[in-house]
Length: 44
Image (cartoon, rainbow, N blue to C red):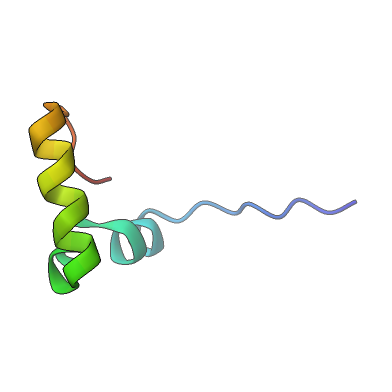
């Protein structure tokens, strides 16, 4: 069996980062919900 997860900081940030979230309607909702919950980190 091969390893499948090869972490890359840039890829992670670009896929799940704040700017990517802020771009979509659903993503904005994610940010709002996480702010409401009082998350220390909103995105990666």
